[in-house]
Length: 110
Image (cartoon, rainbow, N blue to C red; front, side):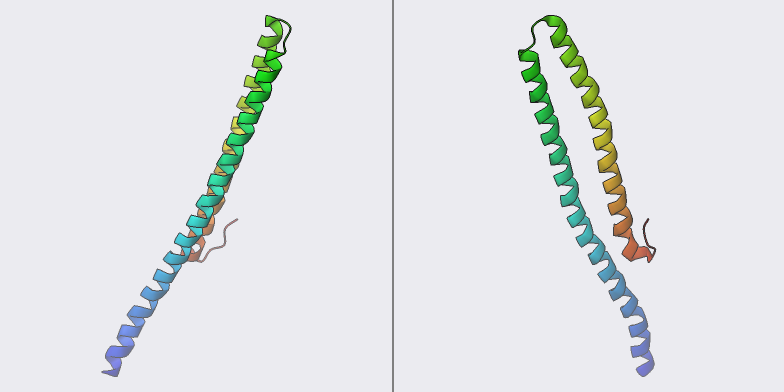
């Protein structure tokens, strides 16, 4: 009978530990999801502000050439901004992914 109890303990304890690790990883993923959402909203706000700034500048242009220059500048800057924003979000997600699996693997993320 005592042998049965120790056998059950040897099975149940690792299962409990694994469950706790999975729960901790899930909680961390929820926190990280909120961080990613805030970052994306920050980017959207910045992009909207830049778009309105370009529209204001274009509305003050003296001729079509200036409008085209303002538009071209905005498009170039927005493309660069988009690349940087995608990199930021990608790095954030990757770091969160590493942190989320850390409790399951026991390995420290970089």
